[in-house]
Amino acid sequence: MEMNRIVIFICAAAAACLMASCSKNESTGVNDSNKRFLEAWLKVNHPNAVKDGLGIYILDETPGSGKTAGKPEDYPYAYLEYTSTDLEGNIIESTEASVAKQLGSYADGNYYGPVIRLRNSTAMTAGQEMVLNSMNVGGRRKAVIPGWFNTTNFRYKSEEEYLKNVTGEDIILDVTLLDAISDITAWQLDSIYRYMAHNFKTPVDSLKYGFYYYQLEPPTDTTSFESNDIVYINYTGRLLSGKVFDTTDEKTAKDAGIFSTSSKYEPLKVTRASDYKDYSFTVGSSSAGFVDGFSYCLSRMKTGEKGVCIFYSELGYKGTGKGNIPAFSPLRFEIEMIGKNKK
Image (cartoon, rainbow, N blue to C red):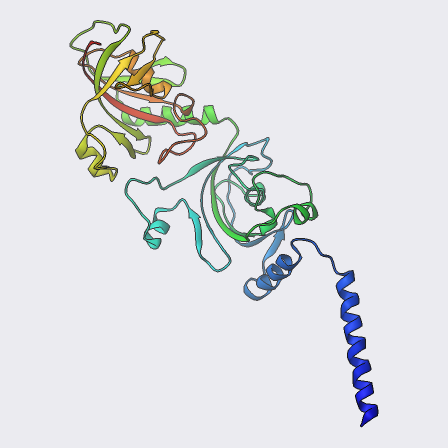
């Protein structure tokens, strides 16, 4: 009996030594356990997943027939729709209205739809970039992005570098690539041309690069503005899709789902800047101003005039967007110049 106990003790000690030895030889990288977990999860849930690029996993794909997104230097901008979830299926982010309705977070005033993302920038993670690289326009891809690729600040050349330097949560990205864009200005102008051709029967004046004006009603007073003139206007701002994002009209605000009890729906008081710059206006008695396209539109209108101005994002909210205005969005404003008086 005593001999058996000694044998058992020796075997247990040997096993302990073996485990210790293995532990010392095992890598101790920050993502080791995460990597093992993801590999096990894929084996159970998606055994046929295909590893692509530096280490993303393609779960499902519908190939597109258009151009390949390729390198960011070839097509710096991606026009896309997407939904991202965690591995358990919990939705993290989506551009889809149907998803927002499913979650109960849908609001009429919010923007849902395609967005433009600047590639190889903080607007897109390294993993999202890897998913797009080999996609063709018109295609849809569902892929697992390991957490170590979930960074917007770094771009490495190997998976090993990401594993050593980045930690994050694994996500599943379901993305449709609608277009790969080389020149964002040309792309916007083309969108504006097509919009004008479809919505206006007569030519629209181009008064400034990227800016277009269509007069709906002529002015009742053709007197030019002077420094410190006060102007009263009504306006409605829309995306080219027709989505209203701002207005002075209460009914329009309610219909668009952007009505706010804290807003005053009445003609807006604006003032021509005292230094009489080309198109500088301020709101009411504050020093706040407008985006360049809006101010330029006001500067060329006269009392009693109604018109529509359309301009590209460089005269609007550029590549950042604002609120429910997506980045790189051309804007349309319907403006009525009600009257003016001296300050």
